[in-house]
Length: 141
Image (cartoon, rainbow, N blue to C red; front, side, top):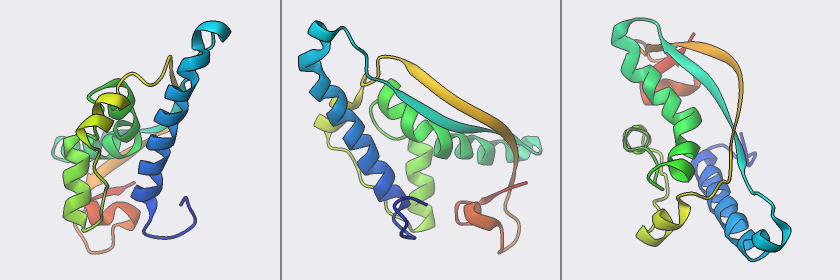
């Protein structure tokens, strides 16, 4: 897990968002003269629930994998509410954006790129050992 230090995943991801936004805004002064585009290609593993009861867990996995990035750049400018709550409940910390950052995050990609390689089946975690997502209440099959 980037940056190679356990327990820093959300901090690294947050800093990546801030860096992307800064790079996008920096290019604004060259955009008209160069007629270029700045975008980001997101990675997502589609998540399907094992049963109808597992749908909330599958939706949360989608927020972790895709919504974390897409909601910030293409939606509200902030992280999805369910993602923030899931991280909070797990005892981990996700930095918050200021109101100014939220406004500045929106629309910072000139195109949408998506890498998709596989789909996972997701189910609610029913035991103490549920793998890397167990702290969030679900496991990947």
